[in-house]
Amino acid sequence: MIDQILVIAGITFLIMISPGPDMVLVMRNTMIGGRTAGLATSSGILAGNLVHITYCAVGIGWLISQSILAFTILKYAAAAYLIYLGFMSLRASGKPLDSGPMRDGVSQRTWFAQGFVNNILNPKGTLFYLGVFTMVITPETSLGAALLLISISIAISASFWLFFVYTLDLQIVRKILERGQQTVSRMFGGLLIFLGIRVAVMER
Image (cartoon, rainbow, N blue to C red; front, side, top):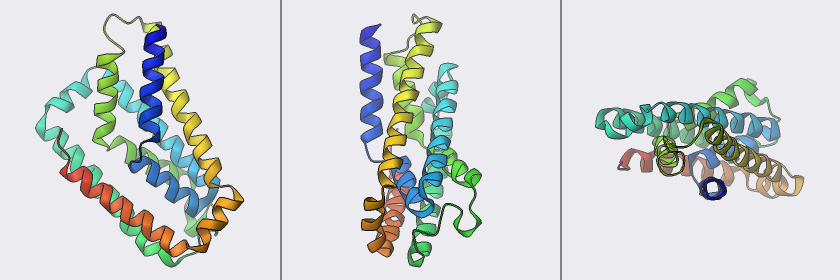
């Protein structure tokens, strides 16, 4: 059991520190809307993780990974959404970053939805949790042990997002980024578009 805990903790930590669409989106929303936006976006991502875990646990994740059509639909939907967010960032590049968490009428529900949709459409989420269930959580793993391993993975993810958002929202960090606010917004926009294209061309 200890080996399983170490494996799940290590895999989760490595996947969290690897740059990807979720990280870029949390960075973007935290800089635009502050800590509230970053935490709401992170909560949406964690909710998406729970959905991935649920359908992988019942076998649907395996079907998606084996179906070319389902995987392709998911892949292009994710790519389109990332590119859309990227263009929205480019359009907002001339607006100040420090206008508050409800800038332009954006609510916590919207930030949450962005994180949730971005995560749930990411094909890598399916493949990651499918790999975890195949390698670490097997049919021989008891329900209690499986719930413990899943809880550890979610706890590590949540801790990472808390640390990440609070670090980005530090006054000294915000001041540095706000000095080059147009560059920052354009960078986020470009990264999101790049990741969208990357998702579109990825293979299973």
